[in-house]
Image (cartoon, rainbow, N blue to C red; front, side, top):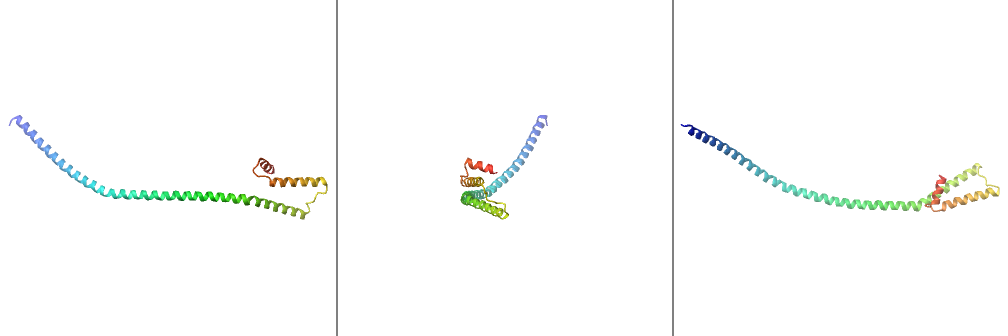
Length: 159
């Protein structure tokens, strides 16, 4: 056998081993591709119902959020109505109740002073006029509008 024939034989053996190895790799690759195909089919079968369930859950959550929005709007309306009602009651009854309480307090104090003997009606005309002037000023202050500048000044002076 010559060197050329030996080299040809080695190349032929090399190619036979290479082709055998490539055939083994291709057989294994075909098995992997078959398993991947089966896996993709199984995932597809399970994913479609899962996506449908997720879609239904999202729709249900959206409906619930719409209901919560309606409830929140109703609660806001009720709170505004309650606030308006309480301010109306306070404006209607608050002023007169404060005046009645202040008057009753003044009457109690006057009765207590009269019992103690510390309250004496002024005998002098000047003192009586001064007392009458103070009473008129107090009555004007109580009947004056509450929101004006003069009322604020009076409240600031009284403390």
